[in-house]
Image 1 (cartoon, rainbow, N blue to C red):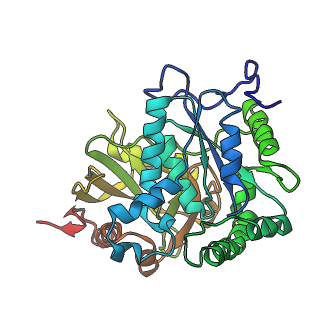
Image 2 (cartoon, helix red, strand yellow):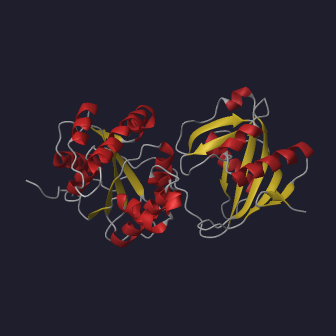
Image 3 (cartoon, one colour):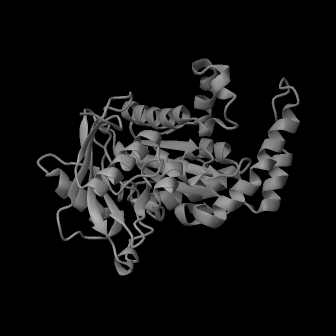
Length: 374
């Protein structure tokens, strides 16, 4: 018999923590249903909200459908998938957070995420709002997946709809297979749906999540700033004088080891703390200041002061002790100045470039938006 499962004994909120400003009806959490196109995410999600008390369906496809009303056609034509648009990823985060603030309870989100950096950006943005995500992957056998794609209904009024929609799904099987082999299988809780109906799949998900079998994703909770911030980065060098860059799990793009200075904390000490937390390397000496860069506000960002310090040269043994992988970093690498130009955003690269010049000259520099002043 269908109906809501008995959740009385389930530790539903175990490990998630209560988000700040959570609705009184209970702590907020997201069940993210991932999988290849055609895996049955949306139909399973519709069944799942009937089983989990106080749950709501949020399909990010509605964000994609709204983008033609928000962006010019020229911008939309620059990407092949709306997931590649930063505005889509941010709107998904903001909409999910707004829905939970309004409704409380559980948000069930059926959406394919095959790029790890997009998963990290979205889940990290939700974690910054103290919203835990339980990640589920629907993983039918590929033969079953192809059969389901072939049998999908398509809108009759869409020109060449059947061919285009099915081909789109077929084209994404290979990226799905690559994601499954590299990161997806270890990140999400797998449910083999080859022999399951959507309802049976939903029952299995509800039981796994409710019993605590599916934990909240281990991702750093970095609250978004509400005003200008001071951030400290530390440049670490290897024996060939290449600089260390890190790829954080909680935001997109490469960075220097470091982070936001906490209230009452000395900036250099903040950099040392962040280096230890992110890489496991504990600096014995307070690093020397290289640049102070004022970053102007660029909505939705608030800007602020960005400091870079010289953490010195690591020997091969210290470099080999970097803590990877971990909850904060997806990857790290030592790079030359030229290689850094291909990884860092332009302003961040300019900050690095002038920090390297300051290191050579032995004198700190003051920058505004990456440009020396004075």
